[in-house]
Image 1 (spheres, rainbow, N blue to C red):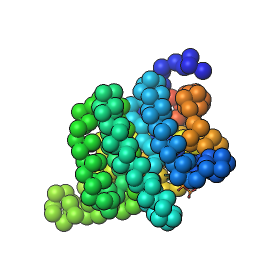
Image 2: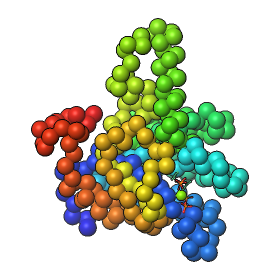
Image 3: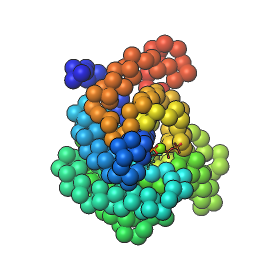
Image 4: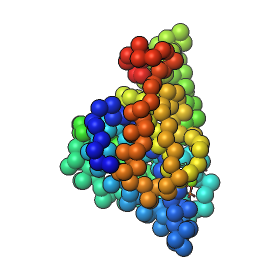
Length: 247
Ligand code: IPE
Ligand code: IPE
Ligand code: MG
């Protein structure tokens, strides 16, 4: 499995880390223990991505809709993110990983917001890989936030309504400055997007696996990438005529 060629590795890999709860329930554990196991997985998958040459890894950790869950579970998840930042930031920095968070950060606790801001600032010049953690993230919410920001700019006469096009819109998304995902993996057996990166996945390739997130591993990433490599991405054009249309 390790014998994967380094050509045509997805530059941006996005993962919907689903299945923590069911993984735990099957073992007679609490859902929160599943989330703990899920957070522990992140380091291994990040290592695998660095090793394979992925440049941007976006992980869906908490959706705008996940607030609907019981308070106990929500509080636990938020605490896990804090713990992750506290415990992992030195390691990420040593690996030259740039840490970013996408989502509506402003509604999180001031303490968590501060930790996020500090971690992003500290790692902002790191070049090996960008780790984008989606917390309180919703794709529809992102598009609305982007539209509002653009309206503000038009009001402030930074540009005019006629200037707004796909390229300008893109520059105001949470993911500004990053390429779109080449490959999206969803673990946990569901075949849906659950409000993840709606704008950015217009031409992304998909890979769905029944494996629950805490059981996911490098071999599975390699399987997904192998499949990705065999696909022909046409971006609406014709066979291999098009170059560079992806971003
Ligand atoms: C993914 O696992 C983590 C979050 C959504 C926060 P789930 O908690 O959704 O696990 P399942 O889907 O219930 O198994
Ligand atoms: C998507 O999983 C969100 C994350 C993995 C963070 P969900 O478990 O929330 O999605 P649904 O409810 O099954 O669509
Ligand atoms: Mg789920």
